[in-house]
Length: 292
Image (cartoon, rainbow, N blue to C red; front, side):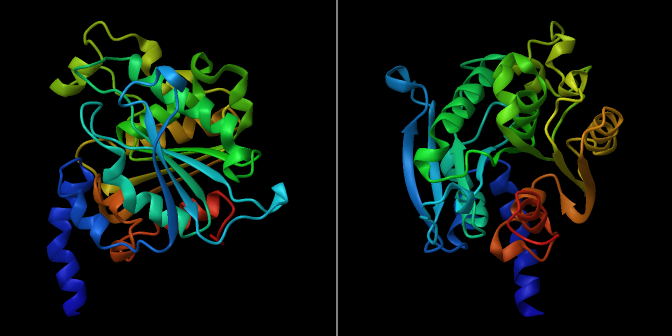
């Protein structure tokens, strides 16, 4: 009981951490460092890579099999922060959570507002995703099991790459799945002032919305949301996207989880907070690493 109360007391700080504050170090300090191998600051745009066009690679410590069929799935995780904040190092707890479960995980940075606006951050994410597809086998992953994943604004980025053919073109066919956590997929008109600036509101095109790009060619999807989310409406966004995907014949699993909010939904993947919600279990099951 004392341990549980202590974790509850820390949840406020951790919630702020995963929302993009420097206090993310609190959560990162609570997770193991021996359950993965880390390769940092790998450029994904070649010799012309800009300072934020880099990513970190989290590899499972136990994985170096030769047969492709025995290799781990590759998960590319895009973090949130309302397209104006966030650093890949803030999300070590996500890399650890999935790598310790057997996945190879890439966490890219991408350019943010005010340096760029929509759609430039999607251009960066698409570059990172193409790099991941090109390098999957060399990294030791299974090139037939490549997944897009994101939380909040990062889930938007991942959804656009998975659904809108402008970004990956025919290479979308290489995706084994899309995982969206508390993502905004249908948010016009834009109310939030920071989001307005990032999307040049009111000149935001309808094509900026993931939900308008749903088709039968979308990858199978896992959509998770928090019942206590005051930032992104789970009914309109997560369940709305799930309804559209199902209507298009796409295999989709959608769930609104209790006891978590917008930030603690992603925080729940970390070992100290897994009792909050089965987020890690759902993700690992979706990528074929655990039973549901």
